[in-house]
Length: 223
Image (cartoon, rainbow, N blue to C red; front, side):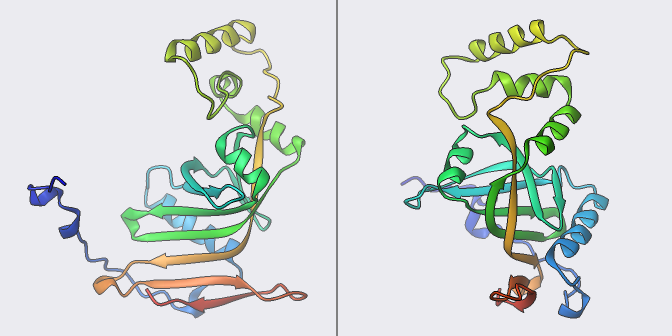
């Protein structure tokens, strides 16, 4: 097996000391979505590139995992929403196994948020409202791409897009694709990770109490 000889490229020696304030339990919001809103605002204020980018991890019914980066488009007390082609790999996997994990990797501010929960399709009215807010080109792209399916060439994809652009020119309403829509992840646990020096990171996880209360409680994890 080939070895990396340039020390600058050796992952074993790549390390960084994280210096930041300790996150105390008493400083957290009462529920994870309110706390996420705080940190999301701080990530945006720090001018991170696409702070709404998140790694979405799904798996098949027999436990074969897959991950990809997706953009968060909505969040509120109900959970986190992203949009996709339901026939894509993640769409198919979530249809057979709704358990999902989200990871927000805010590296420049030494923070991560990790969400575990279950995904379900949102209503078509919500999907249509978001679809109408997308740029015209993105609306056409949702029709042109049969996401995750094999395609012969880039030229074929461009040809599909050109045909759609001719059918629905700028200013003309594009119908919402029936195979495209939103998924809402309802969290059952949300972990807030803050990096610190000597790898003594803060890991504070909101977890739900057992039914019937379903209340949130916070627990500290060893780093």
